Length: 83
Image (cartoon, rainbow, N blue to C red; front, side, top):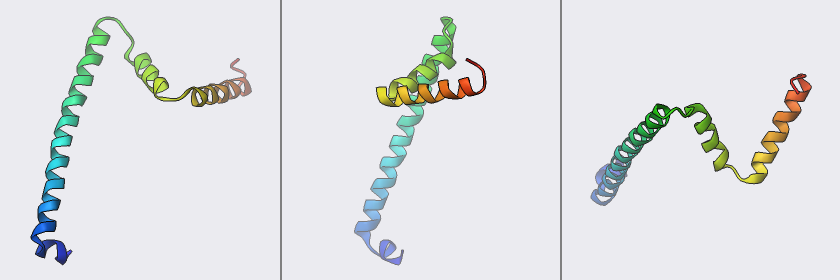
């Protein structure tokens, strides 16, 4: 650690990383606020936010992953006598 403190170049580089991360964190907070607003609008229009969140999770997965997950869920439901 003494090397970083003694080296002006490394300290400057570290400071740049920190400042970039701070800006990104600010952007992330802004985007999170935007997402929250969209969900509030969605709910205000009568849509179910929980269902929409589930759809978003599903859409992130590829087809094979979705099919595998659905097959496992169906197997478990059958094992529990729920299907």
